[in-house]
Length: 197
Image (cartoon, rainbow, N blue to C red; front, side):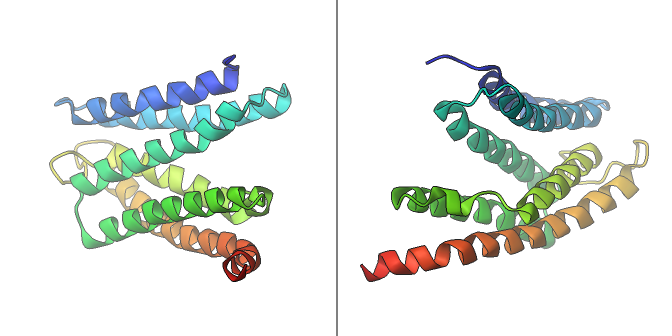
């Protein structure tokens, strides 16, 4: 198997997951900047690997499989860290909606692939908007929360950035439900036909 540049960037994103966890829990004042930077770097590699794959036609089956896995691992890890650090019912609910939808859509895509209909559940525009809102929300929250369950009052704009991240995460959860419904709506006729046969 030949590793393409996009696949190497995807692997880098997976390597950054334990780095994010480690940096977030270090007992220093600068760790919020470092955690936000690591997450931002991962988000940039997510965009960059797709751009390089399209621009230079560096597609591979392994890369196509690994890219969404890396995305889901990074987002889930960030959500778990944030909920553990700021454990409110709303934060837990938004995280559960986002993680639950990712699992459900992955399962739906697998089923559609088994039926030879994978192309029918391609990423829609609402899914792309959801991804941007979600990434900005997580970036804000990683910057603004601490492992001891408080918003960072001792950092520049800590409280306002936390509030922005909090509202954006709620918006991302609602967009997640919408995009999940869109996936299901497109796939429903095929799924009903398969259940009947």
